[in-house]
Length: 76
Image (cartoon, rainbow, N blue to C red; front, side, top):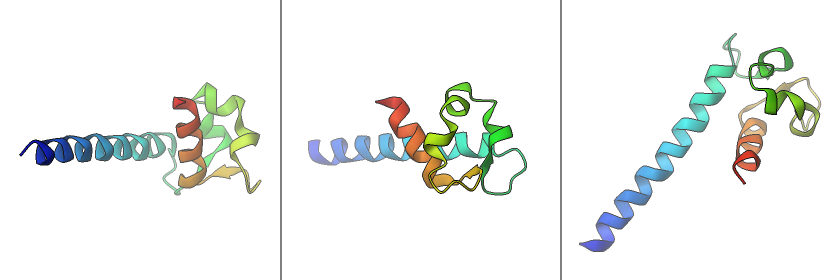
């Protein structure tokens, strides 16, 4: 029984983190084109300041994977 409760708690924590990350991406993607532009990133100064580090393919926008990398590194 203990293992089931522990597993359930961990599953909830992981799904909450994924939801929060996706929700932050959607909030910044104000034009809803599936990417964050440098102009949209201004709303999050810590992202805007490190823009070139996270725009790894240098296409002047962050996709969800690039943004996830930013969020992961910001937490550490």
